[in-house]
Image (tube, helix red, strand yellow):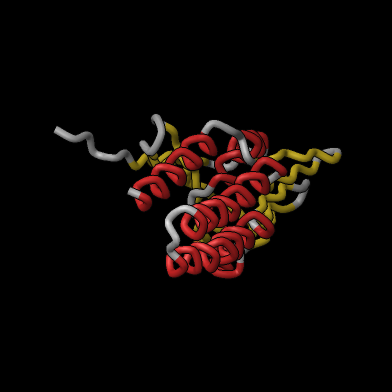
Length: 186
């Protein structure tokens, strides 16, 4: 029963998190920066505090020292697994460049691309049916020298996509669209 309460607690927190916009858009002149904001940090802290609350319940009410220790260990692990994404993931659009940054485990997706080096772009839309239908957006970029750069779909890139699309249109760069839909259950 206690494990079910923990699962319900995390599921409710995930649902609550899905109701809020976690990214911020900072515009300084013609430059745009998209990154995670205070709301994302609030939920990171909640995801770290929730195991602490259940550890206290396990210790005080259930007299389960082993379970309490596991939950106490889970709290900082939850924080340090999610915090790098919140710190490092960002998209910057300047007059001359499109910069994309991911956390250290996904650094292969970090790139600074000059707008003048882009031949064409494919906007990749992936359907997510976790809490209602929504789309996560990524981009596959082909450079004039033939190299291809992939920016996989993520929350910050999805938030930046209207400005990216506008910039691509303004610069008259060709953009294709590819949708990946989740098959419907029959």
